Amino acid sequence: MLEQITPLILTYNESLNIGRTLERLTWAKRIVVIDSFSDDKTLEILSSYPQVEVFQRQFDHFAGQCNYGISQVRTEWILSLDADYLLSNELIEELYLLTDHLTKDAYFAKFKYCVFGQPLRGTLLPPRKVLYRKDKAIYIEDGHAHRVQVGGESGYLAGYISHDDRKPLSRWLQSQDRYLLIEAQKLLTTPNSELSFGDRLRKQKVIAPIVILFYCLIIKGGILDGWAGWYYAWQRTLAEILLAIRLIDLERHK
Image (tube, rainbow, N blue to C red):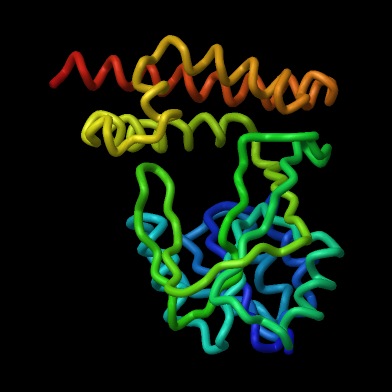
């Protein structure tokens, strides 16, 4: 029944990631990739996998790309992945066994965050809804991120996915500048009563970076992961500092 699942992936200049991701999807009969006109070796790598079908679409937002991707899938089930997601052997085996007994409409998967291949003990990355029925799913924008809404019941997969982004730090910084502007606009335009406790904390600007550093290193055990744990903690702290700067800048230019 694995032939009833189609992996769906978005790409834009993912040559340092996509090959490793596709190597974990050799079981798939067809893989749908929505590419935002990559100009590195991404398309060359994709073309070396015969089950991959590439559709190019000018990027507007993540929800638009994903919903377009859903329209290109022909199977009942979609496995939604980022270009730097690597399925574990346990998850692949679970999908093989599960497909005859899928009783829910969507399934969440847990993640192991990796820093240049080294898995961390714990991160801020929550479980994500990755497997769902095509005819019950639609993506919506949520700040700088996007999420899928699936009608019906949801369950959890036992296997995990490794998040292992090998793109250079400069690419991460460019992305954060764009993402955090959108996130700051969301925080400033959403009433406090509709924000989570964490987002209300972020609006205070000063507290969140300190809390995130402590949380990553101590609560999540990053200090035990050596340089990789410190790298991740400083990366997440820097993101919160940049968000605070964006909030101040937007407030001053109202």
